[in-house]
Length: 109
Image (cartoon, rainbow, N blue to C red; front, side):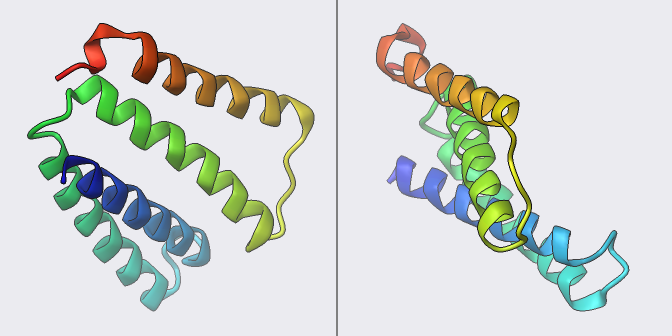
């Protein structure tokens, strides 16, 4: 259940981030409201995930997947581009999350 909560937190963070981009600096009412609602739901689920996942591990997964998936959304939906340094940086973030989850004793709960 803890990873379901974390997954839902990530999904709603991505929704909130996407609507934030669409809000044009909070100048559009509907995307602004949807941003606030999505982030509220995101933090609700993240707080429940933190009941059984250590903060550092949960945040690494949340942040790492959020960065990777946000980058994909930015390319696919918003037609933005990623250069080689951005792709290398994203790869390093994914590698860091992988190392934390599979080799760190901090991940054991």
